[in-house]
Image (cartoon, rainbow, N blue to C red; front, side, top):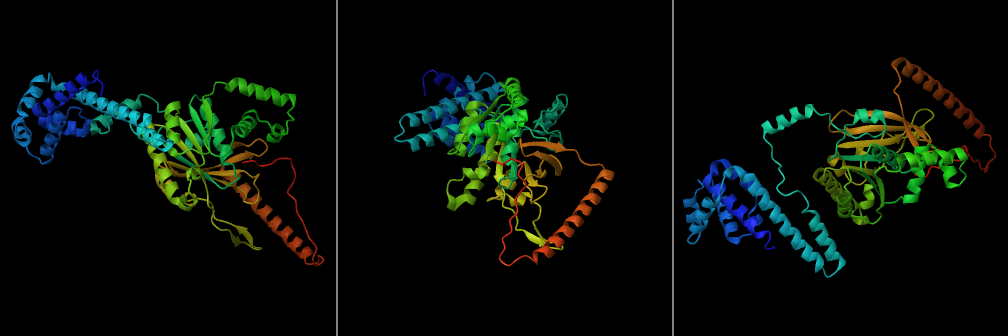
Length: 468
């Protein structure tokens, strides 16, 4: 500890002990809640504080005489000094803040020495991780009376609450997400969760939110291609094959000009740990981060479930402690398909949050869970069902998103009115009957096919791939 900080710290420590002895009934519990003995730099005052806390925890009246008897000879003069030195107990919170701030400074300086003297990179990383845990504001209040809580509620009524704008009005209506929340977006492979996440992240950035997109598998040039395709509504295949029309080039230029200063950053984070993500989030000051995807943060194939569990807990704590909204993408383990109908057709139950891969801990930790699925399980170009399967601050819900496969873009489809829904149901039932009739005719024709004849079917070629 430098001499420049020592006098201020000792004065605050002396005054805090003085407050304990002058007004123990009013202040002892609050001071003991704010400070630990290790926060005191002066060894003698640290001993006094520890003894005072032991007396108070024993529910023995705390005063100078009892404390002096507990400490033994040699401490009476220090106790009298503390009581005489304390100018006013009204400033007890300021004394506690000064002590906590000085303790935090000493701890950070100690870690700095560990970092300087680290024998190898592993030891240096361990020192950095320790430092990250020391960055919370010193003396931060974490206990509130009901009076404080209800006063805060009344104050907030005068100020509209700020929720994240996802760029999809129907989604904004269903989930009210503020900073400090943990959101999961789950889907099967190749359904489009990365494309949807990029669209949501860029929409947030365009509203002024500072967004960090930690990509564990998609390089920045591929992400840029997808985001330009989405934002400028250009066919991704035209971008990949370098065959942009003059109109497409103009739209790309307009998008770049309109969004050039959007606070969006993509971090190629293939080898990152949660600790590195946390450090980079702190350094950059992100308000919202996306992780694509959470299972890739597990590094040991033999311990994936255990590691994903630890990652989930760490992300949940990071969101709360840093006040950052964490949106983590997750793979899905779909339920097995079963045969239903006549003729039988393979299908599977609808996906739920219970199908999140590797760890049920994700279900426990998340504030919001979004599950995306195909509306037609046999067609990857079909619309998407987006289900709010967990919502701590509101009801569960579902919505239909129109999927533009050529541009990897999602648009909300307004819900049908009751009369329209009935007509749609009747139309769908008729289409099902016609499809079953065609299948029966094709099955009958197949019986007359020559033995050993190979039959192939091709998907319609519209020139578009699905590069999720």
